[in-house]
Each structure stands twice: as structure tokens, then as C-alpha cells.
Image (spheres, rainbow, N blue to C red):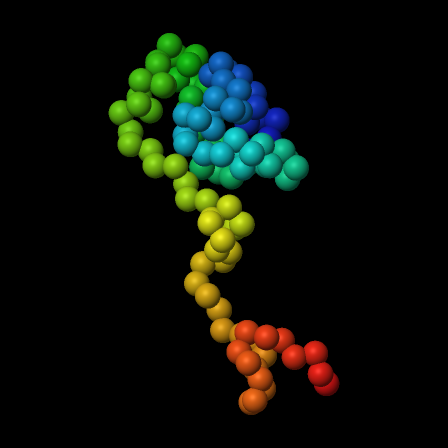
Length: 108
């Protein structure tokens, strides 16, 4: 789904991107970053379409969503408290014998 269609569906539901993000427990910036791509992931497209249709049919989607225990997504990357990419990786260039581990040698 295009990002413009996504925004149209949110509009049908009477929502802004910020309000949508809050309802589905996602970071607003993660959602709005899709504008650069021009497309939204299919799971967000489905949710937005269902919310838009529910609103048109007079169904309170907020009441429905409040029955679901939605856990916020875990932070990834630099925001994940000093970890990036998960598990610690092995060094590509292990230290040469006789050098201290963790210190890069600039000699050739």
C-alpha cells in the first residue's frame, strides 16, 4: 500500500500517524519513516484499512484494540542500551601474538 493511501485510511478512521502509533504501540517515527519509501509494510496497511472500514461502519476500533494486550516493540540499534545488532561478534582481525587484546595495532 502506498503511504498516501495509508494516510487516507487513517483519515477515514479519524487518526493521525501519532495517534495510530500510540494505539498499536509503535514509535511514530518508525511509521512516518515509510513516507520516504512511499510504501507501508503490509501489516500496517491491513490495520489501517480495518480501522478505516470499522470507523465507516460505526464500530469503535479503540474498544476492540483495548481488549488486546499489545506489547511495545523492543528498541533496536543504538537505542537498545549500548547494544547494536544483538550478540557480540568475534573480531575479524584477532590481535597479533605479543599485543594486548582490545588494542588495535597501527604497525604494518
